[in-house]
Image (cartoon, rainbow, N blue to C red):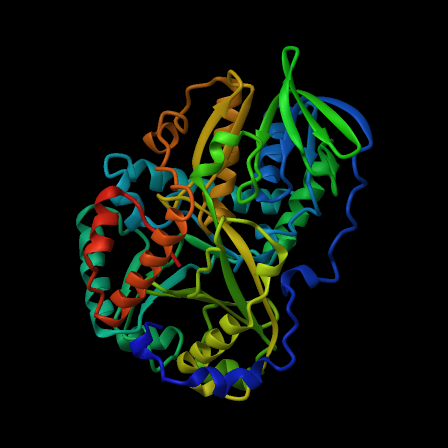
Length: 477
């Protein structure tokens, strides 16, 4: 909710709901979690080395084997497959490749219809792969509702719907007035909604990562976990990557490390880590589900700059996340940032403002994780070492779906192919890099303050935000 939609002083009132919350990601506690593969010891050689065992790396390895079953593929993961962003996110798998239609239309108006088509095909491809490999990840093509919690947001949603209709971009999207949106999910704060019925699926994010790992192993990919990639350098006609106990020599390398420091150092300035936090409730009873009327199991997100995302799990829990977006000074990814009680208290207060009918419900899990954020909000791509290395990064929280597209882009780039994907301006150009400290921290802090002020002032964007808009820069909660 925007701050004006929230009751003041609710944080303390609702902290009792957090008394039994474990500070661990709900998804990663699943009893079906597989055992990690052994670490690499000694020397390996391969055609393609994939660095990173999240969605980006897993899709790259899987799609590489599907393109050429004879290709020899090795995947390295520094910890365990899916343990970072891929196992901590909300499980929203969106068709959008551009962090939403509005961002895509602003940045690539001439390509937006093609980008939307490619995104829809990519989501279909994810659904097909889940079925083909029997990945049990609670995949549900339920869609998502963008809800307004203030009158000005309702007006803006209506205006935006009219605009995309006029541009031929509203296929499958429906505008809902207050009564219609509350008929879908009942919150006294909801004023309107935009329902994208086909463009988003809900899933269990860790189970997707584990299922992709199993599929890769089944196709012959050699996966090494607890094997961080320490250094990258040319080696003869290919590349070599050093690990703690060995080395991999490969003809080509795909880097899917995202928020973690890229092995190509010049890429590092293009991303910063932003920490996002989420809560998971205990399972709702049939009576509690009935009182909020959430029968369609859609994902939801509100329309404020500092927004929340929320959805139902397969066992009828509510995941509630977002709002705070925390950038640590210096951009360091550290485990201590994964837990933030002051944000959990804030989120709990917001939850019960949205669903006062659920008073007495408790949270069982509370966690955080780092998002690889870039200044244009959507992924960027490139090559290094004369085309022997490719990378994709900067998904800014919408990588569950877009990472599969990014994997195909990396494979196209490594093959030296001009394809429908590599010809996109989105693929050919990079975002603006972030400045060094203290300018990065100062700029992000000022942007966050300005976004909060805009939420309090009916969406009015101050001079700083308008300047950032003109420069094509931004910072998203």
